[in-house]
Amino acid sequence: RYVRQLQRLQLLFSPTAADARGARQFVEEAAQDFARQHPDVVLYVSPQSGPGPAPVLRAEYLNGTVRDELIASKTSEEIVQLATKLANQSGLDIIRIRKPFHTDNPSVQGQWHPLTNKPSVLTVQGPRLQPQ
Amino acid sequence: MVVLSAARWVRSRLSDRFWRVQEVLKYARHFRGRKNRCYALAVRSVRRAFVRSTKARREKKRFLRALWITRIEAASLEHGLKYPAFISNLVKSQVELNRKVLADLAIYEPKTFKSLAALAQRRRQEGFLAALGDGKEPEGIFSRIVHHH
Image 1 (cartoon, rainbow over the protein chains, first blue to last red):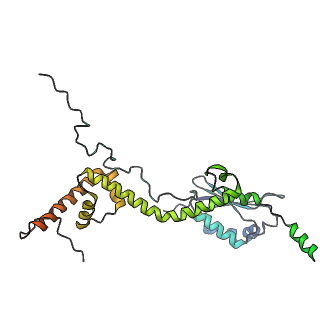
Image 2 (spheres, each protein chain N blue to C red; image 1 turned 135 degrees about the vertical axis):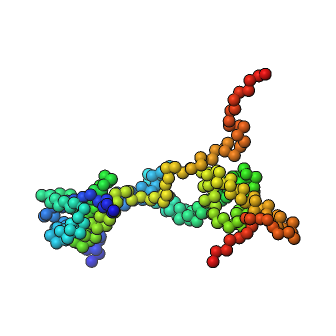
């Protein structure tokens, strides 16, 4: 069954700042619909009093990564799109994956070493023959 | 007038020059010498590095194929077969394994590779018998090709 990797979304904005207008509109109009459509994500709305830092949408994932996205001077629709994008992501870092495959046990028959295809006289020590 | 346009032009100055410079320098941090610190030198070096990395993506395919061929050649020589004989006889026995997989088998599954080398050797002997000892029905099993329709 699908387990959503996004744990919680924190909406940090100031109710008086000019660039948080989109955030305020999002909270008034679209936040409830978003929360209903994503029942396994907890949405926290925390208005900060007074002039504070830029309005930010903080996403926390099940593996512990915290991702901050600036929502200053964004419309409500753009914030909804951003929130759905974060909800569909997992918490893995967004870097280039070197290889699309990985194994912990690459070798089943034993990895090659210079003595694999040599006669076993070189590796095996037999029982020491008694002098007669 | 001239005075008005000069004043308007002087009034706006860059405030995020630091971040614009860091965007370029972050790709030059592992370079040698002043190229990793000084912006003017770093811009040129970073651009050349990007161009080289774009062109190298085509070379990487050739390089890796040559590496696989070297490894398969070494592994098949351990079993007494040369690389052209090995590959051609595998293809004739309808074993469509590419060089990447053959190299990985040679490293991680040596017994499987030994059996593949034995298969190629047997197919080679059957080929010689079919070509030289003509007239009799060849007893070769691995020479008979399976047709999928």
